[in-house]
Length: 477
Image 1: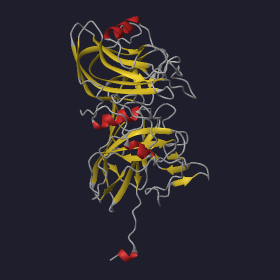
Image 2 (image 1 turned 180 degrees about the horizontal axis):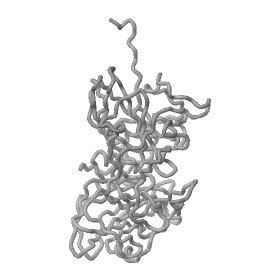
Image 3 (image 1 turned 90 degrees about the vertical axis):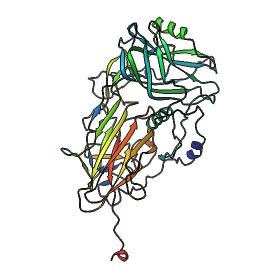
Image 4 (image 1 turned 30 degrees about the vertical axis):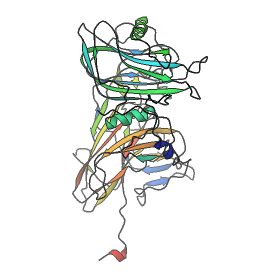
């Protein structure tokens, strides 16, 4: 696991921001030209692409995740989420492999311009034996740094697609952390191993959310950790006020944990069985599932044959957002705090690891393009996807994606390539690359993404036919 130096967001992104355009008309894609099934419902209506939308094969693993996202906006000190047996703990011990996902915002205090909210992750053995915790992967980022010692990623305006070429590209802390996980990087704020003793809570991570000097007084932090414990442990995340120079002591955190005081929750969810509009709320509990793995094949086959029509699969589909496939990919919760989300709607922090075993069964060379797209969930079905004609509207996906097996300059499969995407509501995804296969040729393509905290589901992964240009008559033998 690589570790990068702590530094403000790369200056390079400021220049890239200049390429971010105001809402503009989407240009026809290579795969849409001459392909027929793309129609416009009206002059100002959606673009309808007739195609197949399949359920995503595979499923989530059984790795437990301490999901700490309620409240998002922290308005008071206290326990955020705890698995300790004492109230308000959820009374569950992690043993072996588990993850942690934490995402919070702090808006300062009304009577101070330089306040800092401190976050802590603490752990304690569930028995009288010491436990070793190892960080297998993870990272953290603020939205805005107030010193050069803090890892941060501001929400800079970026174009829809940028390919990473050695320099990390991100906009927002969720985007930054997701990219670090894909690359195997880690923020310098995180240690690699902890030896924790029984009988007391040991701070693993102490992280500030400062607002001094910011206008408005608003900052956020994302944290993801992939962990392994040598024995059963209870874990909690805590929040308390302090100054920006010195973190609260271990004794302070222990006192806060012992107090049983809980940080106020927000957004009471709509009950699971309700119909109509849903208030999803946010998660404060233990999620079941960290990674979704799948091979995307044709029904009853070991291959995915290239065809003349587009195929898409939902990513992070959820209740009232399944594109009418009937597939809810949302991770269930083992246990959760009362008044918070009853499922991990959005699968934030979940890694999607998807393999496409492509094959060309035809007698002609064929090409397909791969894209991540953000269709209108209300007008899309299993037979069509609906898109806006312009690129305006709210950002629905802001984060990285990695693809292995795209064409290189010789139309051979390349190694991992990473791209940063900014997709707005109803936006057809920019082409990530193409795959060219001769008759009878096969190639395995891998797509990986960590669903970022700064996204709104669902999206789709699309395989799009590319029109083959006919040779000019003068070029014919």
